[in-house]
Length: 149
Image (tube, rainbow, N blue to C red; front, side, top):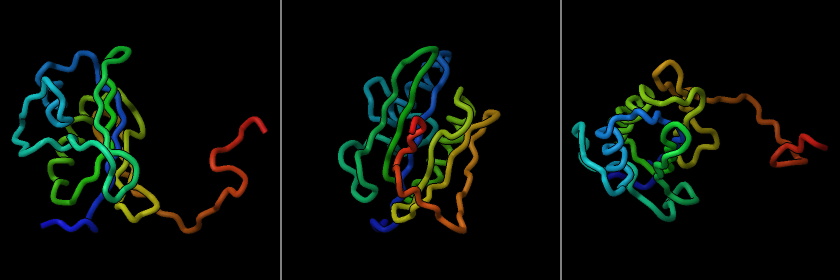
């Protein structure tokens, strides 16, 4: 049985093309626990259907897929356990091959860590960039920079 101390935060925010096939949309809807979803590709259960207050990472658990512009907007914020990493790796790679977003599309963070590992989409793939710092420099004046000051 997984322990609560093994929890990670997964965040994804990306766009998908309007030409996404119906079976791809049905798989995403299934993972999100939405109507019109259909299980596929051998997944045992939906990965992103949890909603409400997060147990360990703070904030809320979400999973949204909305039409917008020339395609689809996907946002996911979920708690996950390393036992799910094989399925998560597979679905994130699948999304990376389909996304129209280039650059940062999310992160994976151990719930006690201050820095996440970034998920970067480029050239039809998603890679993980591990952030490490030698020194942390705080900005005492502003949490969010004031570029007009």
